[in-house]
Image (cartoon, rainbow, N blue to C red; front, top):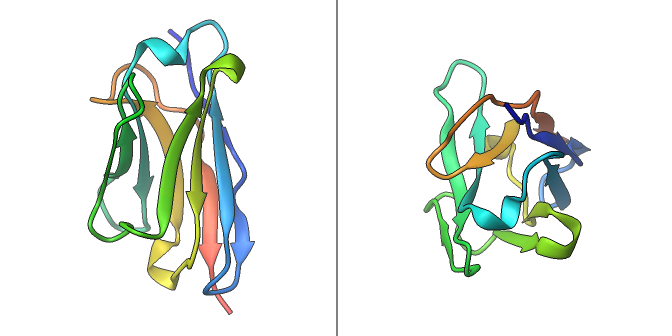
Length: 114
């Protein structure tokens, strides 16, 4: 099965921005609704944002107005632009189909700290 590969995480100060990317060789991401999920230490994995095949989007209340999910079908890539980051956004971020299906990738670590 195809495993997504996430990248773009890092250490950022509160109020900063990051852009996460998700690719998955061997599958055409544009065929599926996709989601970005995150898992903070000691917490369950949660859905942060999702995008349909027609690029309509839905966000968790906690990130609404700060995060933007998008897709570039020509590049077979899904993005998550994260602005105005807060310490509570610290987590490992994953992408997967929505609803989640198949193996999870390694994720990309986001740490928001001063």
